[in-house]
Structure formats: C-alpha cells, structure tokens
Length: 277
Image 1 (cartoon, rainbow, N blue to C red):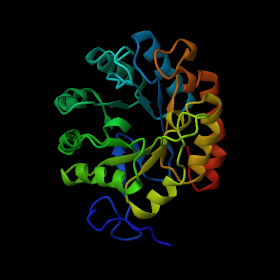
Image 2 (tube, helix red, strand yellow):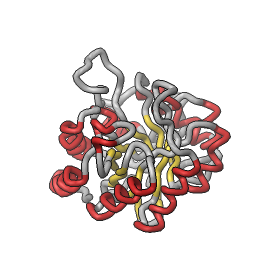
Image 3 (cartoon, rainbow, N blue to C red):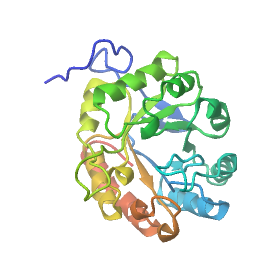
Image 4 (cartoon, rainbow, N blue to C red):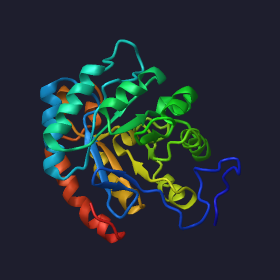
C-alpha cells in the first residue's frame, strides 16, 4: 500500500523507492545503518550540570549532545534558558567530549548566532509552522532537525520540511515527538507508526523522541526500543545527572544509570533489524 501525499510536496517525498538522504556530521552519518543517539538535558542549566551530562552521554556510547539554550515554555514564568551563555557551555562540552551539539533556535534573528555554536539546528514542535524561521534555516549551512508539531499531520510535517529544502538546505532530519491527545496518562501519544510511514514516503532520516513523546521516565526505554525496531535512524533522549533537580522535564529525564542500561539494551534490538548502535 502506498500513502497519498500531496503532489505539491516535491523535495520531501521520494522520487524513487531507493532514494535515501544521508546526513554527515563529522564522522557520523544519520540515515545509514547506525542508530544515532542524541542525548542530554532538556535545558542547559549551568556549566557543572551540562558537562556532567555530556560525559555521561559520551561514556555510555551516545553520539550527539542535546541541550536547550533557548527554551520555549508554556508559561512566561518558567525557566527560559541561558541564551548565548548556554551556547557557550554547549560548545565547551563539545570541546571536552568530542560530541557534536544539537540545540533549538526559536527566532529567525537568532539563526546565525545558534549556527555559530551548534552542529544541528533544532526546530521545536511549537515552531514547526513558523514559516519565517523555516525559510531562514533553509539558508543555513548546518543540518536542521524538524520536530513534528503537537497536532500536525504527516503531510503538514513534510510540508514544513519542504520549506527548508526549497530554501536550499537539503540536510533535514525529521523528529517524531508525540501528538497531543485527550488521554492524560501520558504527556503525549508517541506515534511510532510515523517512523515506517516516513521511511516509505520520504528520503529524509527520521528520529524518535520518546522523552517528550511520553513524558514518563519509565516509558522512555520501551518506546525507544520500539522506535529502533520500527526502523528509526536515531533517538533523541533526555538525560540529566540529577533529574530530581532539573529545571525542566525532570519527570521524563533518564538518570545516568538508566541511560547506560538503555544503551546496552538497544544493541540487540538494532541488530534484529540490521542496524547497530
């Protein structure tokens, strides 16, 4: 069965079944036979916290460090991130560990600043349809990780990727992070189905974010494994050295020992689908 996607979307859909986009970041390839794990805290809170988290990610076998310097929050009273200071700490962590950095950019006027520090520019779920921002990162030289909006269809998601691709930036990574639902048991409903759908209809690599997708620490590991089994090219995981003290998303952040265990448990799952971690 083929899935019907608007024929107005030209670049974000496959022109042939064999078409695959592979994105190189240093020695890493996203979209190949290696599952890339992006991990780190939701927010860069201070230097000690971020450097400890980065070392945990590195030692456990993670590949890319994630951390928010600019944070969009539901209420204006919540921690909004450290801004450029956070970017500087991320750059220091990269220098110390060798891990590339992915971090979010919120506004078109900040793209050059964030690009000067980051290896991957993240567009968050709330900004998926921020068209001026999409056009701006379409001119950037760094890869872009585009999160699915909290109520977006797959076609709408691909349409937003089209904006970036049409701007000339062909290095787009799609990230499934869950959809808003009437069910309050979990934070979101993680659409694992989106992974094989994207693999069939789009050449772009797709990663799964079970941390935001569930909002529940105990569910992150099983859903991460489900994503790898479904064919995800990577995972985005929240890891914090002290989750109970986290300034954002502590309830879904993995402590170091859980992250190390998950990295070990992912290996046989990846091998079962012809991949490695």
